[in-house]
Length: 258
Ligand code: PEP
Image (cartoon, helix red, strand yellow):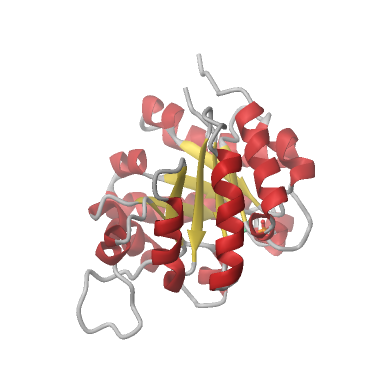
């Protein structure tokens, strides 16, 4: 049985004042929504602020990136141990903006994933194809390659410690959402790929959809049998939108697999 998870990715947005307002709205609104799980992944400088604001709530704290190295002379790096020190439960790894803007390769993403799990953080591993890749029919191959890089480094059982986020690059921040059927197809493919080696692990694997999820389309996406919640960018910055998406997760059925 997989409960839904909704994680906000604030990206490089926020300020002390706006974060305070947003978190103060989220905490009481999400408190009664006990059937799903919630998280916000905030920029590094605001981890302490969010840790404090979320204390005692049912909203977990996450970061958006982690250094691939353990510690030492890596100027600008933020280690997994540091994230754990601030009470992070989740960390996004391999977001397409990290891959495409900052040049992170599959191997670097795999190292980051390994750092996260070694420090008992739950990586939210992002995978997804560009528009050109979708149009040339290689979506499944791209997602498989991104997943396999992590499995090669950390081993298949490490997937039990992670959440996958399928995020088609063409849907991120564009307002163009994948249809529920398009999302379901890729989610089912990811699950089947894991199931080919370990059926039980696949059944328990949480696979989120990300890409222009809003209050208006969340329920349809979350109704898909292999969509276990969402990674939410833009809409996680507006309290009313994010709360409505979390309510859609709470209202969606847990997925029971035969
Ligand atoms: C994201 O940043 O992971 C994302 C899905 O963004 P958006 O919801 O804005 O498309």
